[in-house]
Image 1 (cartoon, chains in turn yellow, green):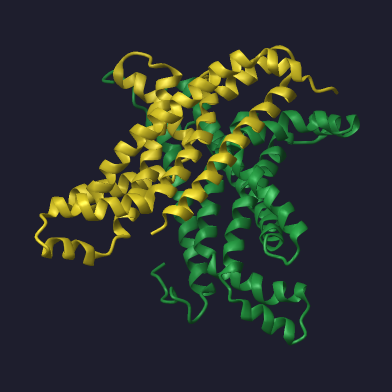
Image 2 (cartoon, chains in turn green, purple):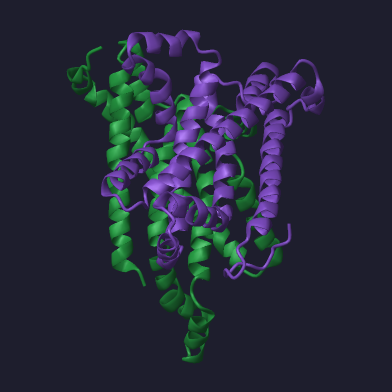
Length: 217
Length: 243
């Protein structure tokens, strides 16, 4: 068996198309997932009991299911509900947002809970309103605390997007799979996919741990 | 949505009830076999990451970085499609044609080796949390390094990392769903298959959802018993929790 590097080079444009889908899914998943996650975290910390219970139930439920099962749920259920097909990309995106929001919300919540109560009291005692205390004292520190963990979760999301394979979205892995199957070059293609994912995630993790050491409180 | 034909009876009708049960059985088999491999390999990794030997530590670090940074699905494809091609022809042929339940074993090896890197890192943290004095005490009382690991460091590391190991154990059940991509007919795969045949997706995915929930509850409950028994006296979290 001989590795054919030229084969990979020839197909770089197609692979890049797939990678763009992967990156788009990752980016949208991060933004929307953090938005929903923040809502869930706020609901859980709101002190309004039904809201807190509902948010906690959501988080617990989504954390005990395989992501694949959630993708299938959305893939079958959403078209049924909307009355029209929505395709693999949006099914996958909705699944990622629903699933990752559960994890993001736990990260955000523990970031906020990590701030000592005394800080809030000090803010209030020095005459700031509750909102101002949150904005100027609690949230900046909480963000700083949770930032590295949030980034690690974003790297995980990037890796998880490869699961769109099961609903036929033409992401990076799927593009490589299609090319490799057509020309019987799966070894080169899967090897290349592994190498790209490895390099990207390894460098990103390295950067995160640097950041963590620099910005630790 | 109003035209959905509900039929919960589908879950207990033949042959589907047996398909679901066999799916559950495969999920449990893949997860348990994978977990066994992960514990053994993970223990070796945890030790290798902490021994006073740079070469061994670097080797273990390479393992951990590879398995941590490549998506699990890609790892599964590498084991399943690429490995047989890289081996000598006879071995490759055996893997592809003659090995019974090749998909199952591939899934076990993929999940086991992947989870091992996470177990290894957990145990490493556990070992590093033990004060150096314990190692020195062991060595100065005449134990060899192997004995220090076997009698002092590893037993303590297992006991302080029970909660983290529990979540890895639950993760391997969830990750076992990925085995469907190489054709293992486990729970998620079976319920999707029946959903496609019968158009009763909601009932079937509800069944799968409840089953995964029950599995995690059982694991969590069982591990809490283990945790209470394994708790080290004098540690911060030494108050027993309600099981």
